[in-house]
Length: 452
Image (cartoon, rainbow, N blue to C red; front, side):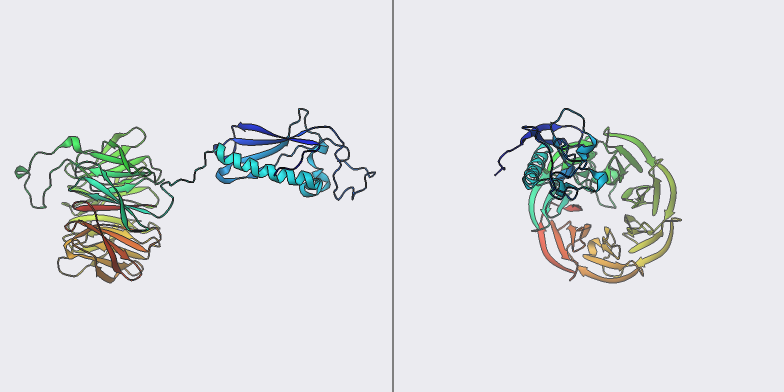
């Protein structure tokens, strides 16, 4: 209940613009009902009404106090006075007075109530919502299904499918915008073909189906398709979220897409059959692997120019960086190796051999703390674990049929692998290195990405 009014009227001034964080400022005024002398008890007068001090007899002071609220709102509590504030209006700060000691108990109670009211109004004015958003609740796992042309959405808290989103032909590479609001998917009109297929034996490509699909992560709906060059397969999003760097497999190029105008602004020649794309942690360089040329092309993001090219193992598929950017790792499918790259000079310093039947290094992900590296092995059916401190193989474990895409949760506790032939996703408990469940998704799952 609001206190009984005495010499002050409570007045709410409509929200105005210009608050902190772009939010409105909520103004609450204490408007004098009469004009009695204002002589609160404080350490200056000690209750002596005859003792003279700067605050004695002043009109109700201007309380220009910022109330920190959720969402960066500021509430100001001020008397609704037309005359400018006088020196005595500031609770005598030069004399060491403070807010608590300068107010009567009734005024203090009124102020606290009004502060709460201002806070509530601030939340309303800023449109604060408690509804779900892309960064609320458990992470969500997005899986591209190459053959069924859709994306499966999995709740990482329950490991259950919560949505299936039709997106277009052959969705493969998948990435998330830095703010977590948009999921991008590479779409291709190229016909399905094995590594030894001949072009003349294949049906014509549907180039109109090429592009980069955009999914609204709040609504889990496809909201548009951007150009991405010919036959886009994999890509990355720039650190500031304004550009995409896309590998165009059939054109031997990398396309730069400006997300602000939705156009391809540059096409960069790279090696033949480009596939894997990785962005350095500092956002200054992009790696593009070339399957046919056994090489990696390094693109400088500031100029969109090639700054280096280096050789790796045969048929390189994917690349990943350590969190500090000092080293990168490149998987080579037919070479059964993971190349270790010194990013200061773009030289391969080591090659980690993965042994086993049909072991073909494909997808790769680095643990959030950078201590472990996880590699899927396609027909080998396993995930290999590499210790990044020693670049030595630590262990391996079974996950499913032909695992390709791989992702790890932000807390590093769970891994998700896309298993193409079995149309499912394996969920691995990192601590025990065991599959805890398998989730049925669309046909031929390919890529995996996680929205935090």
